[in-house]
Image (cartoon, rainbow, N blue to C red):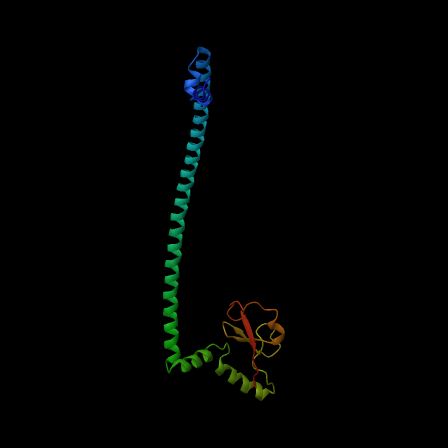
Amino acid sequence: MDLQGQRALLAPMPVSQALSGCGRCSRTRGAVLSAVERAAARRLRAAEAGLERALARNAELDLRLRQTEAEGQAWQDMARSHEGVAAGLRAALDNLMQSPRAGAEGDAEDAQSCCFEWKQEQEQGEDAEASGGGRTRACRWCGGAEACVLLLPCRHLCLCRGCEAGVQACPVCTATKNASLHVLLH
């Protein structure tokens, strides 16, 4: 054999040409082609299923994004509203602080907030002094000691030191006690 003949024998042949020679080869060729088609169909179905999952996840994330954007917008609107309220309150407070009557109104309000009526106390005091007693501001809880505790926020001066620790609400107006101050009265 010459060199060209040997090369022709060793050269690779296409699969279809190699299998087309005999009847038995055509059955093998059909089996190989159907196996390749089945594998390709499986891969195609898997790719389509993956694409469907990706599209469903994308739609879910898109919906979540729209909901989050709407929620964020609602929070921003609420924050702007609260900023407006805070600015209005700040302006009102500044106006009150700059007003020359602010101090006078505060004094009048403080004087009115006391739970004792001064005229009655003065009358009782005069009667008590005449009878020899000196205590006019009795504790509204126990009635025995002098009231020296101011309750906040109602500003009633109505408890003694001993009763203050056990009381959660003002005995005069039943407002919940937030804090208390010990007042020194002379």
